[in-house]
Length: 438
Image (cartoon, rainbow, N blue to C red):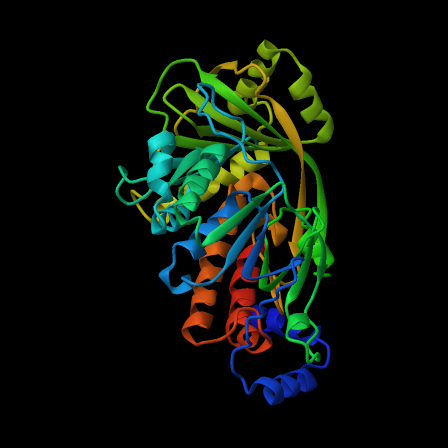
């Protein structure tokens, strides 16, 4: 059985009384759309879609639906636990950044948010170089046209501000509730004759209750939606921490190369921010991470340069094998020596207060959708940052789920129903689970 079929089968097998559920739905609704319930009760505020989590991925989901003309007339609510803040672009770069790929740029362009990013700041990446400490082996990545970008390094706060600025343009279609989060979630009852009970019920921290056809969980790796709706997940502690910081280069350069070196303790990455500044992401042991954030600035800079430049970890066996493979490939493909290895930049300083650490762990939901609920972003899949794809996977969830919801609307299906679930959302499970299992 293929991986895709196994994922779908494993999910479907968990549904209670599949045949009787579908038969009752057919008899009651005749495969037509479910009526959207409106209640005069002040504690019940029905919505077509509720998105739990107003971070980058949740806000991108709200923008994607809010700007789609096919969702005109659909009520969308975004829940954000934090208070609304006024954004100010500081002179110093923030230490939490993302390397966004071209698919993410395309998503942002679809509702006009990328122009907002460009109006603030970002740094293009035109080349990536990956090498290791035990041999001279290395990999490079670039576009066929070397002047084209592979990706962009953007501060998370800049991405979020661009999304929120665009979301305000569709405020009549997307309601944003700040300082609001879900505290209790009740799933639809498939065998009930009550239309209200066939909606997802969400109790908020202010005591109000929302009812919705579709709840989208974008509330991070500790997702209340995932836990409350009993999504099983696979967890793994990497026994590592990620150290982040903002670094100054010894001299200004074009600085459009992303660097990553694999060390025995974990990978270290230097991502370009500007002509003279870069962002550090260093995955290492918990003990070493604590040392790195507590040592003085000069010692820290020396540690970073040593990790990038020092060759004391080279292994003779790895070097011999690498040389053998290089000679073999030269004979197999004469003149195919590939690109030359570049030397990484030298670091001269670390911005005061920019150092921080966070634990690294894997947490991937066994499936991302059940009737009336979908998971996206870290709520669905939290992965190691070594590939820099965590937030890109979340934005890809937004693109995929938006497409599947658009299919449901075009077919006249009701968002979140059992029928549209099997016709539309099973493909979302297969597509996104396949990409989330990293």
